[in-house]
Length: 79
Image 1 (cartoon, rainbow, N blue to C red):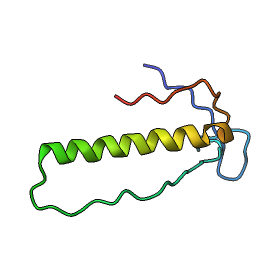
Image 2: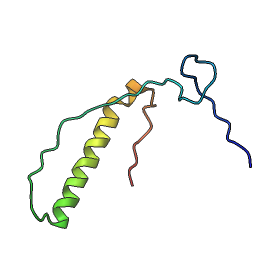
Image 3: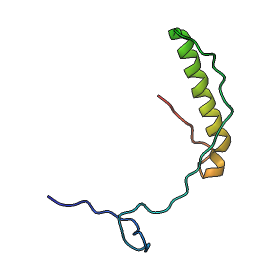
Image 4: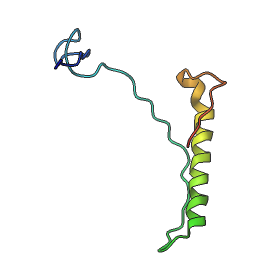
């Protein structure tokens, strides 16, 4: 049995340790999606809202991908 090799930073020094290295975390927030509360939504309504959510995610990705170093020809694929 062997231990995994971990490369990170320490608590008081940055040369060696087990803590994650510092990296920026970028968050992009889009416009809200307005949804009416329903007690028993239909499958069609759920699919419609899911499609709207996925479309908004793709729009956000296309709008801001250049600011975060993603090439212009890269497309977001959600399955």
